[in-house]
Image (cartoon, rainbow, N blue to C red; front, side, top):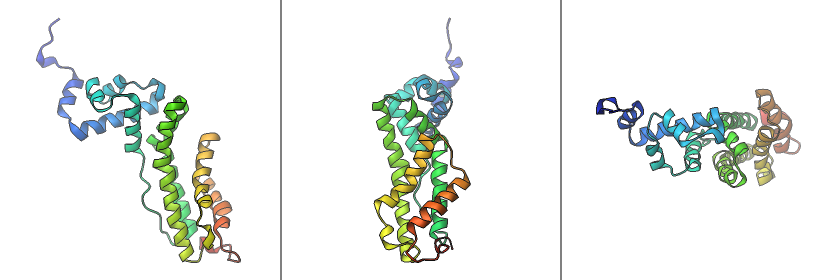
Length: 214
């Protein structure tokens, strides 16, 4: 059978129309979608290429392995945690930060990342674990430091609360509940964690119990 140049495959035609960053974004989006539907074990470079409407060679030129492609897709897709909330009280700031962390964890990239960690072997999981640390945990701790130090300046928070154990609490609790208990964080759950754990933990000795939430 002879195929003329006028009957090129739609995927090849689409690939010719999109180049550079536009094509790369389409491939990364396709990888996230594949992870969400078929998981790590079901994802193939061919499947990603088909979903992105491009050729397999275009994918391999940019990412030599599935691991490289998925790592970049997850890094590009995770919501950024770059600005600490400043709503007037430590309690409200912490609650809003927890909402932002929840959004990152339950976004499509966050869901895909958890799926990858559950399906990968140990060596692969270590690589993707670093994405959780670098993309969610460390940014959260950085913003917690800012909120706590601001609370100390306002005299809402005891001075010795700015320590690594305090900064670990929210990321550890949220990851534990999500990964080990396989349960989601409702708005009520977040409020209870802040009101029953974080506010008492940060409160200055002898302070009005309502002060951190004023």
